[in-house]
Length: 118
Length: 112
Image (tube, rainbow over all chains, first blue to last red):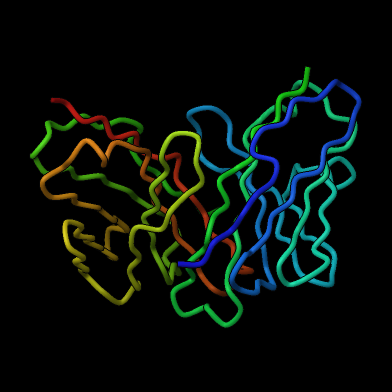
């Protein structure tokens, strides 16, 4: 099946620094990628929809200046957590849908990136 | 707004069948999914069903959809220790900006 790779899988940073997380579709092209945040033992919260070549669409309550999303190519979307604080510590997961694959609506998920802000 | 509800925990003995239930509120749902998440990992699509179907079977997995009651279930036959994971019910409607709405997940625990 299609593979989505996230990097880094774990990152620890100091409060006030910025962290970039990459999401790559390795063997398919994705015009749309989704960024989720997952708290311990909770569901995925959709943060934003990343569209190749255009601005991301953020969900209500998600600060777009805090969580910068760039979808520069059909295989790469990045999430930058700017001026990170301990409350930003979480598990961030991206997903992607292959171009033209709306028949099943299947999303392919990355392995997730665990961010710990000290 | 749209909502997906599912119980948080389920314990089943190895070899028995597991049934995970889910209810949703959006009557316009087009596709309904079951995703599996193993510890520390992303989600893997197990199966999906179109809203105009009542049942779908795929090896040990059986999905039942009651569209009238907006109820979806996932049955895992002959549950194995490797089935221990969190199972997420999800739904979408293509007119809703391609967004998929997830439930909170059901943690399946396998008893020896």
